[in-house]
Amino acid sequence: MVRSVSPVPKWAIYTTFFLSLVGLGLSVYLTNAHFNGAQDLFCSDSGIINCTKVTTSAQSYFLHIPVAVLGLCGYFVLSVLNSPWGWHLKNYWVHVARFVVVIGSMAFVLWLVAAELLIIKNICLYCTGVHVVTFLLLIVMTIVCPVQLGWARSVSE
Amino acid sequence: MAKKPVAKQPPVKTSNGRPAGLFTWIAVGLVVVVVAVLVIIKVTGSTATASGSSGFTATDPTTVSELSSVPASVFNTIGVSSPVVPVTPPQAIKGQPELTGTSNGKTLPEVFYFGAEYCPFCAAQRWPTIIALSRFGTFSGLGNMTSSSSDVDPSTPTFTFVKASYTSSYLVFKSIEFETNVFDSATNSYTKLQTPTKSQLALFDKYDTSKYIKGISSSDDGSIPFMSIGNKFLVSGASYTPATLAGLSRDTIAAGLTTTSSPITAAIISSANYLTASFCTLTNNLPSSVCTSPGVLAAKKIMKI
Image (cartoon, rainbow over the protein chains, first blue to last red):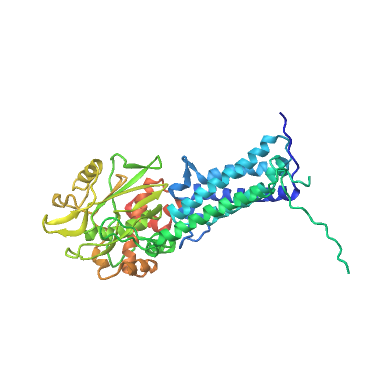
């Protein structure tokens, strides 16, 4: 069965592409810091904000893979999927994948926030930046994806 | 004047009657609720005092922060210069099997500490140990402690590792607080607190001896504190005299850790730089910003590593 996708407003295409690039940039910075010394991060190291503590903690690895690398891979995929080219692909499942990746990313972000607040007891500003970008992407996606995928149609259409 | 009728826009709805923004509201609502719950747990949890063994008092977050956030400038300014209080670096040993532990299923070099709460030398040694390890990871569950009030250097302010846990992607830290600071006249010794495993006891019995520790006699075998730093470096006894901390409160010492001119800070930070240098040999000099910092390089130069 061939499923079709509905068009997506231009503002959503440009917004998600921009957010993905911001997330990709932050992930590149965090990955570089992970391999070249977390204390190179321009970040406060007093009080609850301490990037080094977070990025060198045991929770900075997930299944033996650095979380920074996972973020980099995730945002590389999202940058491709959320590019104007990606949004105009005809394949239905590509668009389902985009929605699933963002929901999965948000779930992972919630785990990382829990780890920062309850286990490491410090917050990393750059990581928080990635978390906020992911949350904003989730908002935009939940507005446009259900309609695009035919799970919700507006009456006016 | 009759009002011009305004065409009302019907609310956007799905074909089955649900609002089109339902997905958004559910997603945002879930995220906000989860984050709010986490923040509430964090706020209420941080004010609670850990309890369990009698007399345990959790170290307040301010002091923990002062220990774990010593500015790089302090480490680098002091280096290993402690002109008033002599500081002894860890002693290198060679040809021994590497001591490792596991963290999250990952094998990492291990730092092992064996001490006791009554012991004034352990009291002194915990300060640089916590500070140095905090450059590689995070402590939680530290408790306030003072050494025995009836031993030498009585009531030296310090911490206890009895409920501490340490997370790091570079090192594993294991500790044993063998006895409390409560003297039991019936047994003529301090009450027992933690029991080492067979392998920990074997490690202690083997390496905390004059065979491996230079400059001590066999009568000093089994001295505490004892530290094995991956079986590549050993510490037996305090790296500086506990008398340095006499008459000071824990808060005063912690708050003074940014004052490079203080002889107390100089002793603690010099010792921390020595320990950091030895830890760096286990971590392949990672994180590089710590292991190549001027303070640590100064320690490496003295230690010839």
